[in-house]
Length: 73
Image (cartoon, rainbow, N blue to C red; front, side, top):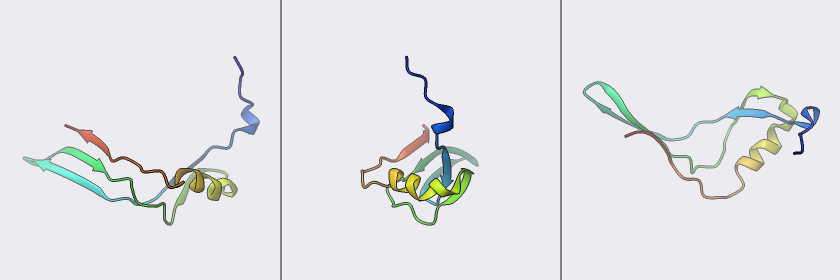
């Protein structure tokens, strides 16, 4: 097995706003759907080297159709 070189790892975590659909029943959140189909706009760095942020955004927003992500029932 090939072990990756930790010094070559470029980990970048960023965040940006996306539309979210929240369903509430009897005062409890029962389902959250993240509609992750919009292009990445105005990302903010959470963790990692800010120099790699543009490359990370390009990799995350390469034109592929993203599904929505659903949590709950």
